[in-house]
Image 1 (cartoon, protein in one colour):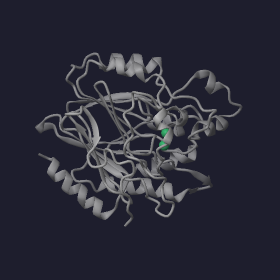
Image 2 (image 1 turned 60 degrees about the vertical axis):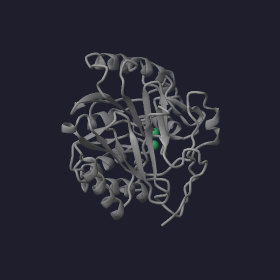
Image 3 (image 1 turned 90 degrees about the horizontal axis):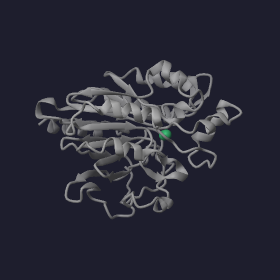
Image 4 (image 1 turned 180 degrees about the vertical axis):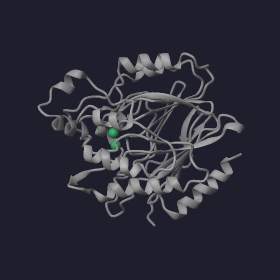
Length: 349
Ligand SMILES: [Fe+2]
Ligand SMILES: [Fe+2]
Protein backbone atom coordinates (compact mmCIF):
# COMPACT_ATOMS: atom_id res chain seq x y z
CA UNK A 1 0.00 0.00 0.00
CA UNK A 2 1.25 3.45 -0.83
CA UNK A 3 -0.90 4.94 1.90
CA UNK A 4 1.69 4.30 4.58
CA UNK A 5 4.46 6.08 2.75
CA UNK A 6 2.07 8.87 1.95
CA UNK A 7 1.07 9.46 5.56
CA UNK A 8 4.70 9.49 6.58
CA UNK A 9 5.34 12.21 4.04
CA UNK A 10 2.30 14.14 5.18
CA UNK A 11 3.33 14.11 8.82
CA UNK A 12 6.80 15.34 7.95
CA UNK A 13 5.25 18.25 6.15
CA UNK A 14 2.86 18.90 8.99
CA UNK A 15 5.76 19.33 11.35
CA UNK A 16 7.55 21.71 9.01
CA UNK A 17 4.71 24.03 8.11
CA UNK A 18 0.98 23.82 8.26
CA UNK A 19 -0.86 24.85 5.18
CA UNK A 20 -4.24 24.84 3.56
CA UNK A 21 -3.27 22.31 0.99
CA UNK A 22 -5.54 19.42 0.25
CA UNK A 23 -4.02 16.10 -0.65
CA UNK A 24 -6.10 13.46 -2.31
CA UNK A 25 -5.13 9.84 -2.59
CA UNK A 26 -6.98 7.68 -5.05
CA UNK A 27 -6.55 3.95 -5.23
CA UNK A 28 -8.48 2.88 -8.27
CA UNK A 29 -6.60 -0.41 -7.99
CA UNK A 30 -3.43 -1.43 -6.22
CA UNK A 31 -1.42 -0.97 -9.40
CA UNK A 32 -2.87 2.44 -10.15
CA UNK A 33 -2.71 4.26 -6.82
CA UNK A 34 -1.90 7.90 -7.16
CA UNK A 35 -2.17 11.19 -5.34
CA UNK A 36 -3.20 14.66 -6.35
CA UNK A 37 -3.23 17.92 -4.43
CA UNK A 38 -6.02 20.47 -4.01
CA UNK A 39 -5.43 24.17 -3.27
CA UNK A 40 -8.39 26.53 -3.10
CA UNK A 41 -9.74 30.02 -2.44
CA UNK A 42 -6.59 32.14 -2.41
CA UNK A 43 -8.45 35.47 -2.90
CA UNK A 44 -5.33 37.41 -3.91
CA UNK A 45 -6.21 41.06 -3.47
CA UNK A 46 -4.64 43.92 -5.41
CA UNK A 47 -4.08 47.17 -3.52
CA UNK A 48 -2.27 49.38 -6.07
CA UNK A 49 0.79 49.18 -8.32
CA UNK A 50 2.54 45.91 -7.50
CA UNK A 51 1.18 45.78 -3.99
CA UNK A 52 -1.14 42.96 -2.77
CA UNK A 53 -2.63 41.93 0.59
CA UNK A 54 0.26 40.02 2.11
CA UNK A 55 -1.66 37.57 4.29
CA UNK A 56 -3.54 36.11 1.32
CA UNK A 57 -0.34 35.98 -0.75
CA UNK A 58 1.37 34.14 2.06
CA UNK A 59 -1.30 31.42 2.32
CA UNK A 60 -1.01 30.56 -1.37
CA UNK A 61 2.78 30.74 -1.45
CA UNK A 62 3.01 28.41 1.54
CA UNK A 63 0.63 25.93 -0.10
CA UNK A 64 2.69 25.97 -3.31
CA UNK A 65 5.93 25.46 -1.37
CA UNK A 66 4.48 22.57 0.59
CA UNK A 67 3.04 21.01 -2.54
CA UNK A 68 6.47 20.95 -4.10
CA UNK A 69 7.80 19.05 -1.08
CA UNK A 70 5.23 16.26 -1.20
CA UNK A 71 6.43 12.70 -1.30
CA UNK A 72 5.08 10.99 -3.28
CA UNK A 73 4.86 13.82 -5.76
CA UNK A 74 1.24 14.47 -6.72
CA UNK A 75 0.28 13.47 -10.26
CA UNK A 76 -1.48 16.81 -10.67
CA UNK A 77 -2.73 19.79 -8.68
CA UNK A 78 -6.22 21.23 -8.87
CA UNK A 79 -6.81 24.86 -7.98
CA UNK A 80 -10.40 25.16 -6.77
CA UNK A 81 -11.33 28.74 -7.74
CA UNK A 82 -11.29 32.26 -6.24
CA UNK A 83 -7.70 32.85 -7.23
CA UNK A 84 -8.52 36.59 -7.38
CA UNK A 85 -10.56 38.71 -4.99
CA UNK A 86 -12.19 41.06 -7.54
CA UNK A 87 -11.28 39.34 -10.84
CA UNK A 88 -8.75 42.05 -11.70
CA UNK A 89 -6.13 41.28 -14.36
CA UNK A 90 -3.43 42.17 -11.81
CA UNK A 91 -4.82 39.58 -9.38
CA UNK A 92 -5.11 36.80 -11.97
CA UNK A 93 -1.60 37.53 -13.30
CA UNK A 94 -0.22 37.57 -9.76
CA UNK A 95 -1.93 34.26 -8.99
CA UNK A 96 -0.64 32.66 -12.18
CA UNK A 97 2.86 33.76 -11.29
CA UNK A 98 2.66 32.21 -7.81
CA UNK A 99 1.12 29.00 -9.17
CA UNK A 100 3.79 28.79 -11.88
CA UNK A 101 6.21 27.61 -9.20
CA UNK A 102 4.26 24.35 -8.85
CA UNK A 103 6.25 21.37 -10.06
CA UNK A 104 3.35 19.28 -11.37
CA UNK A 105 0.62 19.79 -13.98
CA UNK A 106 -2.03 22.25 -12.73
CA UNK A 107 -5.77 22.02 -13.43
CA UNK A 108 -7.73 25.22 -12.91
CA UNK A 109 -11.34 25.85 -11.82
CA UNK A 110 -13.27 29.14 -11.84
CA UNK A 111 -14.67 30.81 -8.73
CA UNK A 112 -17.11 33.72 -8.69
CA UNK A 113 -14.33 36.11 -7.61
CA UNK A 114 -12.44 35.25 -10.80
CA UNK A 115 -15.48 35.57 -13.05
CA UNK A 116 -17.85 38.47 -12.49
CA UNK A 117 -15.66 41.38 -13.61
CA UNK A 118 -15.23 40.30 -17.26
CA UNK A 119 -17.31 37.09 -17.24
CA UNK A 120 -14.25 34.85 -17.34
CA UNK A 121 -12.64 36.33 -20.43
CA UNK A 122 -9.17 36.97 -19.03
CA UNK A 123 -9.29 33.76 -16.98
CA UNK A 124 -10.17 31.79 -20.14
CA UNK A 125 -7.28 33.32 -22.09
CA UNK A 126 -4.91 32.42 -19.28
CA UNK A 127 -6.13 29.00 -18.20
CA UNK A 128 -8.36 27.57 -20.95
CA UNK A 129 -11.81 25.98 -20.85
CA UNK A 130 -14.27 27.00 -18.14
CA UNK A 131 -15.35 23.35 -17.78
CA UNK A 132 -13.81 20.06 -18.89
CA UNK A 133 -13.14 16.47 -17.89
CA UNK A 134 -10.23 14.08 -17.95
CA UNK A 135 -9.38 10.50 -17.08
CA UNK A 136 -6.61 9.58 -14.75
CA UNK A 137 -5.64 6.02 -13.89
CA UNK A 138 -9.16 4.61 -13.94
CA UNK A 139 -10.96 7.58 -12.36
CA UNK A 140 -13.09 10.02 -14.35
CA UNK A 141 -12.64 13.62 -13.19
CA UNK A 142 -15.04 16.43 -14.07
CA UNK A 143 -14.34 20.15 -13.51
CA UNK A 144 -17.50 22.27 -13.63
CA UNK A 145 -18.09 25.99 -13.71
CA UNK A 146 -20.77 26.10 -11.03
CA UNK A 147 -20.84 29.86 -10.42
CA UNK A 148 -22.87 31.03 -13.42
CA UNK A 149 -26.14 32.83 -12.90
CA UNK A 150 -29.17 34.37 -14.55
CA UNK A 151 -28.42 36.41 -17.72
CA UNK A 152 -30.83 39.17 -16.68
CA UNK A 153 -28.94 39.65 -13.43
CA UNK A 154 -25.62 39.76 -15.27
CA UNK A 155 -26.83 42.54 -17.58
CA UNK A 156 -28.46 44.77 -15.02
CA UNK A 157 -25.34 46.42 -13.60
CA UNK A 158 -24.06 49.86 -14.61
CA UNK A 159 -20.42 48.74 -14.47
CA UNK A 160 -18.62 45.38 -14.43
CA UNK A 161 -16.96 46.26 -11.10
CA UNK A 162 -20.34 46.97 -9.51
CA UNK A 163 -21.46 43.50 -10.61
CA UNK A 164 -18.23 41.95 -9.33
CA UNK A 165 -18.42 43.62 -5.94
CA UNK A 166 -22.03 42.61 -5.46
CA UNK A 167 -21.30 38.96 -6.20
CA UNK A 168 -18.16 39.08 -4.05
CA UNK A 169 -20.13 39.99 -0.91
CA UNK A 170 -20.86 36.96 1.23
CA UNK A 171 -24.32 38.06 2.28
CA UNK A 172 -25.17 40.80 -0.20
CA UNK A 173 -28.93 40.53 -0.78
CA UNK A 174 -28.45 41.92 -4.33
CA UNK A 175 -26.38 38.89 -5.36
CA UNK A 176 -27.83 36.07 -7.45
CA UNK A 177 -27.87 32.29 -6.82
CA UNK A 178 -25.21 30.23 -8.59
CA UNK A 179 -26.14 27.76 -11.29
CA UNK A 180 -24.40 25.42 -13.71
CA UNK A 181 -26.86 25.88 -16.56
CA UNK A 182 -28.29 23.92 -19.51
CA UNK A 183 -25.20 23.99 -21.67
CA UNK A 184 -22.99 22.29 -19.07
CA UNK A 185 -25.62 19.80 -17.94
CA UNK A 186 -26.09 18.67 -21.54
CA UNK A 187 -22.34 18.46 -21.95
CA UNK A 188 -21.98 16.45 -18.73
CA UNK A 189 -24.65 13.96 -19.77
CA UNK A 190 -22.78 13.38 -23.06
CA UNK A 191 -19.43 13.32 -21.30
CA UNK A 192 -20.51 10.51 -18.97
CA UNK A 193 -22.42 8.38 -21.45
CA UNK A 194 -19.54 6.07 -22.36
CA UNK A 195 -18.50 5.31 -18.79
CA UNK A 196 -19.66 2.19 -16.95
CA UNK A 197 -21.72 2.49 -13.78
CA UNK A 198 -18.82 1.34 -11.62
CA UNK A 199 -16.34 3.96 -12.84
CA UNK A 200 -15.35 6.12 -9.86
CA UNK A 201 -16.45 9.70 -10.60
CA UNK A 202 -14.85 12.68 -8.87
CA UNK A 203 -16.45 16.05 -9.61
CA UNK A 204 -14.80 19.34 -8.70
CA UNK A 205 -17.10 22.33 -8.35
CA UNK A 206 -16.40 25.71 -6.81
CA UNK A 207 -19.77 26.11 -5.09
CA UNK A 208 -21.38 23.14 -3.32
CA UNK A 209 -23.60 21.16 -5.72
CA UNK A 210 -26.23 21.22 -2.99
CA UNK A 211 -28.48 23.70 -1.26
CA UNK A 212 -26.92 24.53 2.08
CA UNK A 213 -27.58 28.20 2.79
CA UNK A 214 -28.95 30.56 0.17
CA UNK A 215 -28.31 33.73 2.18
CA UNK A 216 -24.57 33.21 1.74
CA UNK A 217 -24.71 31.51 -1.68
CA UNK A 218 -23.57 28.20 -0.18
CA UNK A 219 -25.94 26.97 -2.82
CA UNK A 220 -26.22 25.83 -6.47
CA UNK A 221 -29.69 26.53 -7.75
CA UNK A 222 -29.96 23.77 -10.37
CA UNK A 223 -28.03 21.04 -8.52
CA UNK A 224 -30.94 18.57 -8.84
CA UNK A 225 -30.02 18.22 -12.52
CA UNK A 226 -26.68 16.86 -11.39
CA UNK A 227 -28.27 14.27 -9.10
CA UNK A 228 -30.30 13.00 -12.04
CA UNK A 229 -27.35 12.81 -14.44
CA UNK A 230 -25.09 10.81 -12.08
CA UNK A 231 -27.70 8.60 -10.43
CA UNK A 232 -26.62 5.41 -12.26
CA UNK A 233 -23.04 5.60 -10.97
CA UNK A 234 -22.15 3.70 -7.80
CA UNK A 235 -19.41 5.98 -6.53
CA UNK A 236 -19.83 9.71 -7.07
CA UNK A 237 -17.81 12.22 -5.06
CA UNK A 238 -18.05 16.00 -5.15
CA UNK A 239 -15.20 18.03 -3.72
CA UNK A 240 -15.82 21.77 -3.55
CA UNK A 241 -14.28 25.03 -2.33
CA UNK A 242 -16.05 28.36 -1.78
CA UNK A 243 -17.31 27.73 1.76
CA UNK A 244 -13.89 28.07 3.47
CA UNK A 245 -14.77 25.55 6.17
CA UNK A 246 -15.26 21.85 6.82
CA UNK A 247 -18.56 20.53 5.47
CA UNK A 248 -19.71 17.06 4.48
CA UNK A 249 -22.93 15.57 3.30
CA UNK A 250 -24.52 12.69 1.44
CA UNK A 251 -27.41 12.90 -1.02
CA UNK A 252 -28.36 9.63 -2.69
CA UNK A 253 -25.21 8.05 -4.12
CA UNK A 254 -23.23 11.29 -3.92
CA UNK A 255 -20.82 12.07 -1.09
CA UNK A 256 -19.83 15.70 -0.64
CA UNK A 257 -16.75 17.14 1.02
CA UNK A 258 -15.45 20.68 1.14
CA UNK A 259 -11.85 21.86 1.31
CA UNK A 260 -10.27 24.70 3.24
CA UNK A 261 -9.20 28.10 1.93
CA UNK A 262 -5.61 29.39 1.92
CA UNK A 263 -6.93 32.85 2.79
CA UNK A 264 -9.54 33.05 5.56
CA UNK A 265 -12.31 30.97 7.15
CA UNK A 266 -16.03 31.61 7.02
CA UNK A 267 -17.93 30.77 10.21
CA UNK A 268 -20.91 28.44 10.32
CA UNK A 269 -24.05 30.58 10.26
CA UNK A 270 -26.60 29.62 12.90
CA UNK A 271 -29.16 29.90 10.16
CA UNK A 272 -27.93 26.61 8.67
CA UNK A 273 -30.83 25.10 10.52
CA UNK A 274 -33.14 26.81 8.03
CA UNK A 275 -31.54 24.96 5.14
CA UNK A 276 -34.07 22.16 4.89
CA UNK A 277 -34.19 18.42 5.20
CA UNK A 278 -31.55 17.44 2.65
CA UNK A 279 -28.68 18.66 4.76
CA UNK A 280 -27.64 16.56 7.76
CA UNK A 281 -26.98 18.65 10.82
CA UNK A 282 -23.73 20.53 10.63
CA UNK A 283 -22.30 19.05 13.77
CA UNK A 284 -18.82 20.44 13.77
CA UNK A 285 -19.13 24.07 14.66
CA UNK A 286 -16.32 26.45 13.86
CA UNK A 287 -15.79 29.56 15.89
CA UNK A 288 -15.25 32.88 14.23
CA UNK A 289 -11.53 33.01 13.42
CA UNK A 290 -9.23 34.50 16.01
CA UNK A 291 -7.68 37.60 14.38
CA UNK A 292 -4.47 37.11 16.34
CA UNK A 293 -3.78 33.82 14.56
CA UNK A 294 -3.64 34.42 10.83
CA UNK A 295 -3.93 30.73 9.99
CA UNK A 296 -6.82 30.14 12.41
CA UNK A 297 -9.53 27.93 10.89
CA UNK A 298 -7.52 27.38 7.76
CA UNK A 299 -5.57 24.20 7.17
CA UNK A 300 -4.81 21.44 4.79
CA UNK A 301 -6.04 17.90 4.41
CA UNK A 302 -5.34 14.71 2.65
CA UNK A 303 -8.15 12.69 1.24
CA UNK A 304 -8.15 8.92 0.97
CA UNK A 305 -10.47 7.70 -1.78
CA UNK A 306 -9.38 4.08 -1.84
CA UNK A 307 -12.87 2.81 -0.99
CA UNK A 308 -14.35 4.95 -3.74
CA UNK A 309 -15.54 7.32 -1.01
CA UNK A 310 -13.61 10.25 0.43
CA UNK A 311 -12.04 10.28 3.89
CA UNK A 312 -10.70 13.75 4.66
CA UNK A 313 -7.96 14.16 7.24
CA UNK A 314 -7.81 17.84 8.18
CA UNK A 315 -4.55 19.13 9.58
CA UNK A 316 -5.43 22.42 11.27
CA UNK A 317 -2.62 24.61 12.57
CA UNK A 318 -4.55 26.54 15.21
CA UNK A 319 -7.36 24.11 15.84
CA UNK A 320 -7.76 20.48 16.80
CA UNK A 321 -7.16 18.13 13.89
CA UNK A 322 -10.23 16.35 12.56
CA UNK A 323 -11.08 13.43 10.32
CA UNK A 324 -14.26 13.28 8.31
CA UNK A 325 -14.50 9.70 7.06
CA UNK A 326 -17.13 7.81 5.16
CA UNK A 327 -19.07 5.63 7.61
CA UNK A 328 -20.41 2.66 5.64
CA UNK A 329 -22.79 1.63 8.42
CA UNK A 330 -24.43 5.05 8.54
CA UNK A 331 -23.91 5.35 4.77
CA UNK A 332 -22.67 8.91 4.94
CA UNK A 333 -19.61 10.89 5.93
CA UNK A 334 -19.08 11.39 9.66
CA UNK A 335 -16.69 13.34 11.77
CA UNK A 336 -14.86 10.57 13.61
CA UNK A 337 -14.29 12.27 16.92
CA UNK A 338 -16.52 15.33 17.04
CA UNK A 339 -19.67 14.14 15.28
CA UNK A 340 -22.05 15.36 17.95
CA UNK A 341 -19.84 17.95 19.54
CA UNK A 342 -21.32 21.41 18.91
CA UNK A 343 -18.00 23.19 19.43
CA UNK A 344 -14.95 20.94 19.29
CA UNK A 345 -11.95 21.91 21.41
CA UNK A 346 -9.83 24.71 19.96
CA UNK A 347 -6.22 25.24 20.87
CA UNK A 348 -3.34 27.38 19.74
CA UNK A 349 0.30 26.50 19.58
FE1 LIG B 1 -13.69 31.79 -1.73
FE1 LIG C 1 -16.29 31.49 -4.00
